[in-house]
Image (cartoon, rainbow, N blue to C red; front, side, top):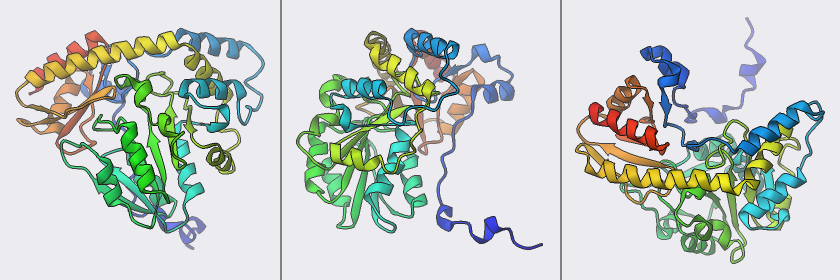
Length: 370
């Protein structure tokens, strides 16, 4: 039989790519351990503890009852863009809406680098950064952080080269939960003027005093920074896939050439606008997260067999297990109906901040697992 055209002409760029591997679903844990779905708590994906705003549910219900679902979405939904700009503190012309912030990362690499050029990726961080870089046929230059994972501007600048065209940063960082301050971002941008500095802020709303610590504040003092944000975390819209990039107007205008014209669905646009406009519900999710993070930090520091990574500013914590392998601890937690991640960084466990009851149940299960 002749070799398939899909084999003969397959692009080899994916060879060796470390594809993202999601954690198990609640249904998988239920089946594996014979636990009822209602008894499982999911603290493995850094999702908002309280779920989405009631305004989102109402807006989606109205949409479903209306006459829009069979219509094409607006390429740039104006009301959503205005809500994004207000939230970020920028002009609407500085906003690129997208089907999740992860879509914007690939657009930026395609728009501001060429095949064979270099993209600096810090690890541990979002695994997608290196993956999309390789698939785009760019060279991923890896900056490895060592415990306790405190990244500095000097670290980043020392790792750049004259060939670096894009620098990916994540603040607060996944999976370490540590943060780069705006002054650090500004130093990096000024020190690497030939690179586009991308600061992903998936988790920014969970940071203490986040409005003064966002990298958006340096957009007025730099010309090579783009900030990407998601509505998946504190806005609780992970299932809708909506996010955006904020940056210099010229950069955003150029990025539009690379973006699918209908990447934000009608439902995502409606839900996103409703979520962004309900600032009171956002604050409730933030309050629960900050209270829960402080509580978990205090309790984890007291536990033998746990070495907590300091400086957490995201809606999650990272800790090393010192008396049992992390994978074994994660498995024991799953048997007790508590889902966390132990496959992101060898020897470490990442746990999302949940509600008060969920946090207490996690700690009870962890004490038993250790």
